Image 1: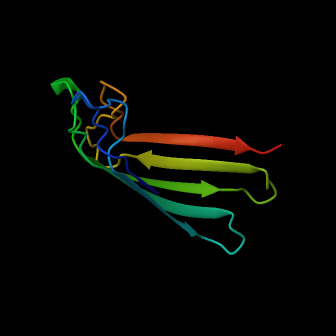
Image 2: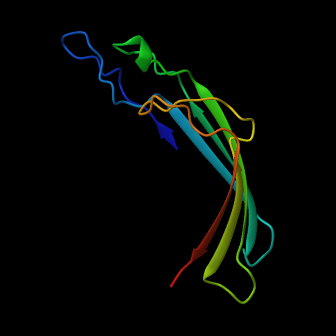
Length: 116
């Protein structure tokens, strides 16, 4: 996935403050068995700096995130999927354009999904 938007400069010289920087997200998933019951994956996210701003505090540095995950659908439970993941494995400090707060560092998560 790739995201891009023009500079967003208004006629008065100010910039729009709700745009997103250039962003690339790549997800690679490898099925560990022929029935696609288990898989491992890697997600890469790159976001460019957000530097066309009106106020200094709106500036956001570029960042790169790396995530890994494992998912499994247990045999006999085709509607159940369990996900285990480690996001931001290199513990990068970063801020989204829409937030003045730093996002989570390295974190481990589990998700259980059941389709009715």
